[in-house]
Length: 459
View 1 (cartoon, helix red, strand yellow):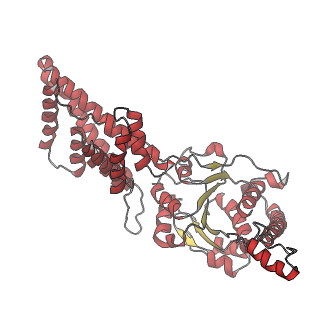
View 2: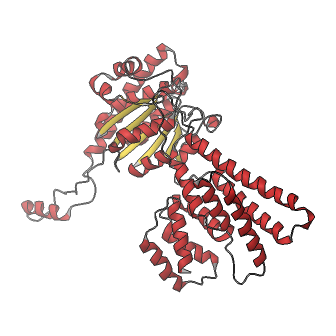
View 3: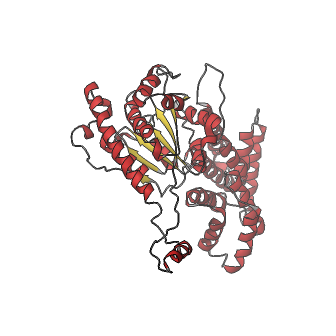
């Protein structure tokens, strides 16, 4: 049993889960308190030690089923020992192929019942960094690597399917059973290659409704506003900013109206012959959030991003800092532009003078990669990341692994999408992939939805 748990812990580590030696030791010690023949209790014991959070449980369940059910370890004594001899013979026949690669070796180990090399290869593909020559931009490296694995699996499957036909009717029963077994193992390997490996995200806050603060202009999509309506909306935003600042100021002024500070109250009561006339409260420091915004400025998405930037930078007193990045296919830091210019002038400068290629195709994967490379130091547990974009990455690699890393470093990630929710996940939209790594997603197509979001953010 100890050897089995150690091998399973290696499989979990190969898949990117953090399993320490002490957790393996704890699992072995806790086996004394359960009936190991009760699989549910055995599984829950391992999951309690190996899965650190709800988000990791899906990956754990997948690995558990693969390791303890699908790989079918050889039993002893085995009445079908001849079948296992046939399996080993068939697997060794693949060794004669020319040009053996690590993928071939991993697949052979998987067929033999050892999934760890293949899991390691899948993890390598998921976290593979892609470097392309300057001027030759492509995010198809991972896709081509997965295609190579798929071709290897199909080649092995075709060879196995042709074996009974080559042997004719005289093929022994053990050979047929061995072929069927290996075909099932290849199906399992193919399923691991193609399945979605997104984690649980039960705590996702998905906003679908909003208050109607303004009936006419408040419900008009940003992308359909005329120049006159844009000017009118700016006036409305200024009024809302003043109201929100007043509410935030009152909240800040009332920060001491919390728990009574008994020691300080009694000390001041000495001035009034022990009568607690002046009640003192414990200082409760309000936490000001750090804001990092990533704004897609391609097409109609920018019409929503500029109004959100307008509100955030007009309310900087409510935040400890605001850092903004505009992007289409690469990140551009526009924080200094907003700090040195009035908000509306800054928006015009971003559109005209910023180093942004507005004619390029949107690539969220490349944007996340550049942000990690150059600006990941801005994130800490006080940082709220706000991403404004439609999630359409033109079929490029979305690099959700980097978004997951950003989630681990910040307080929360909020995604504002200017598209109707009915369009999410259609065509080249990666929203269904991205929202698994966000704390909150909501549509933000008009002024009413924007006001709702900023009120929740500030208050």
